[in-house]
Image (tube, rainbow, N blue to C red; front, side):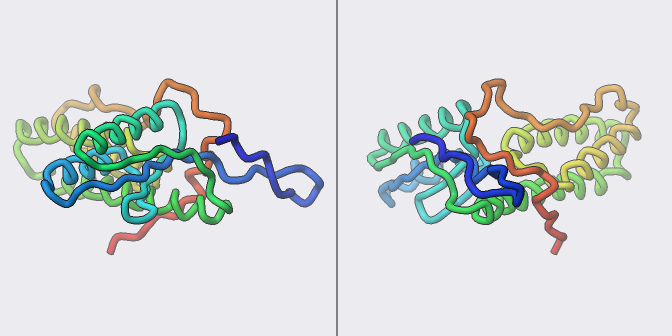
Length: 204
């Protein structure tokens, strides 16, 4: 599907960008056996997909995300289901921001759990804290791989882990927070929703 051309206006006769391109996976799987269906859903969750409806998920489109969903589509068909890959654009920027906000909220929950765990471990022994720092850093890297629209909770989680590391003498091993993305260049129409446009979701 071709990218939609720039649309709208900024009020000065200059075309304003429309929504970016997303890659969608539409799939259906047999209810039994349940094991393949559960395995597919867990893989989709690890990718950080946006759930549009039952059996329809999406990611911002680039070479990496398209390949990831194609692999899962193959897995679905091998398990006796049906699957299709689509390239599409939300009808409005508001719809795209809603998708981005939902994805950012899910990542914010994960980052908050890391920060809370780091804070709870502050009183543990140095050896236990060192083990915890290694584990929490690995968890931050896993979250970053599916973090397309970083929330402010990301920085708080990294600071909490750094503070825990400082108490163990492992400051030098602290990783600078970064948004991990594929080395493959995103498609020209890929969503470019600024992180600052995604509101932070307060803790409940």
